[in-house]
Image (tube, rainbow, N blue to C red):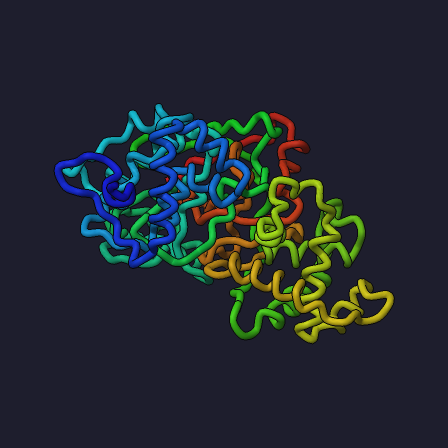
Length: 425
């Protein structure tokens, strides 16, 4: 039997991805294909719906994201090798009709077709393709004939005003809202299909997005601006993460945000906000416990316990005492809870920066997150996003976690007049 990863779609040139000996993945795909031939795709979806990891397999965009590290002779094969993905035969039939194996088209054209189709025919995951946009820095721009990085931290607004976005200086000439699937930074996607986040959902039954193609390379998405980034920190997940947390904590409690309604319980809630942000709300812990489908029913104090255990185990009990969260003294270290929280934080903090907004909200954003970046909730997105204002529009920096806004809170508190359109190029 042919492996589906090697023969995803009949083409004149075989689309092949090298998994470097990852035979366990190949075996799983062989089993799924064998049973789908006998029982049909619906039966397979039902059988695998109980396990989050298997449900993730049914997302075409997420599978492209997970395949970033795989080698191929032709970068276009990153897409072509998955064109027989079983999601195309269910809710994404319209998506499939818009994509064909075309070796005449350039790599840039193929990636733009995929991103455009994913936005126009989203199925149950409206903006997952925007979450797949991951980079360590913005593309290059042109300034009077020479390439320069896009408005680096500390650059003047005068320089920014005369810089123009020039995709000819990017390696693949992609708009900022189109993922470059040839680039692999090992960054965990916060908006994976089984994620319990609902930041841009009006309600569970209304996940609609409002996306329009304005012109070639420009999209318009409706959403709500939450705030702007005031300060950011580089996170060291290897040696000094505990010191990072202490530094950020001191900054947090020294701030006097204009609106403290999100953190009514005082400093303890601020510490919870910090720990939850750094761990993506402990979603990985919930997944490993089998509680991802019941995530919203679990009290935040349960996840707080994991973060506190890590702080105690890291020798930062004095910080907890100063915050008044240890009224009965320092507890005995819980090694299991401490390790679980650290693994969750390490997984999501890699390739990301921590930020605080002008109103004091905690943000875990992309590596290129910078002061002045917008924090926005886009309709249909599982997580908030960080657009950067530029030349009358926006550049997409990437997805983010913002404590207090992960379950549709911004949309519930927003009137129709507060919605704005983000033109992203």
